[in-house]
Image 1 (cartoon, one colour):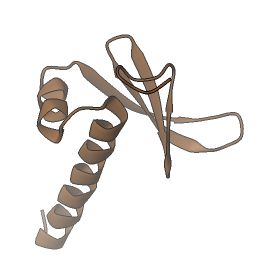
Image 2 (image 1 turned 180 degrees about the vertical axis):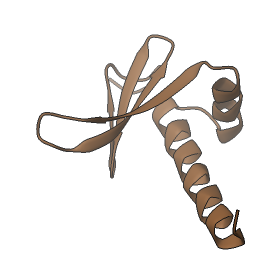
Image 3 (image 1 turned 180 degrees about the horizontal axis):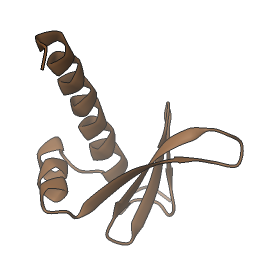
Length: 81
């Protein structure tokens, strides 16, 4: 793999891990461990309005990460009500 491509991919993966950490209220290291153990699944989707998102499942939690927004199926643990 060409060096610029691998640096670009590293940046994209780091951004994804950061977004997952924010969405799941976890640290980057916790997310990486959960992904390595197969506890987090990631897929791509599109809502009825045509907006694309990253679909994340962690246990019973389902989250959609849109460009600039995170939508939870229910508030994350410890979130203000």
